[in-house]
Length: 128
Image 1 (cartoon, helix red, strand yellow):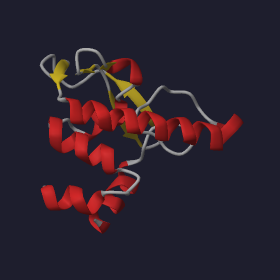
Image 2 (image 1 turned 180 degrees about the horizontal axis):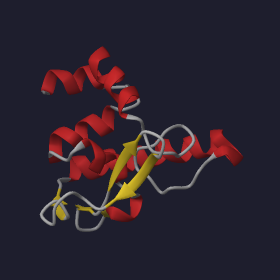
Image 3 (image 1 turned 90 degrees about the vertical axis):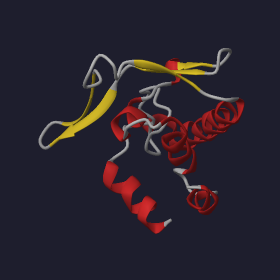
């Protein structure tokens, strides 16, 4: 995992991969994370939703599969620092996208703010 994360440095999904390894969150949960889910002062992440894609319906938000999946994850300062980096990166994407930005408040999104597609993330994963 360490070697993978070192190789992922500079990849657009570097922080997504880091958070997946650090927290054990499922892909849909990571894709559904919003900035409002981060408790910056207590270093906690609140898992409240996931993104699901269905043919003909596209991407939509839904509750986690089980009540136990609705949870709060404590993280350390390095993770909070990486999330701050992600926030700065996303602010840059917003500026570049301009009027095309779709404000979903997502931590991990496409370059226009929409939910990620797992096939694009998998391509990057396999290239690393």
